[in-house]
Image (tube, rainbow, N blue to C red; front, side, top):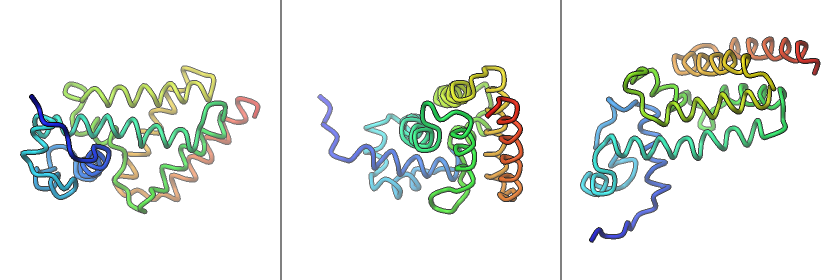
Length: 181
């Protein structure tokens, strides 16, 4: 019979999520995960099987907490194009002032389409569906999803955020004119 977990799983998954978000899967060591979570490798492996298991659990946690909260805070249901604008602009202002980027985007780039974990497709689908709902246009939603993901790659690469903000402003002004807002 398995022993019950005696740790705060949200705290553990948040710590692991930040390690993977900053460093990626391949570059994250078990020591990094131990330091971020406060658990030993044995405890991590007993709970999640291996590093990949920790990664998958932390990634699902990312979608459930970070992505869902970002959408709720900036583009809640019924917020329309104005909400999408706020969502995009929020990408430029990480809470810690850093630019670790998005775990979904970083993982899609690291793994590619062949080996991408399931949470990548799930996160992209949530974003696409959110954009389509707020915009009311399925075809344009894919284009905005590409803009969103591309901006995240540029942010991670250290691109000038002021330039990205101007691009978002211009794009959303055009969308508002097109949609009569």
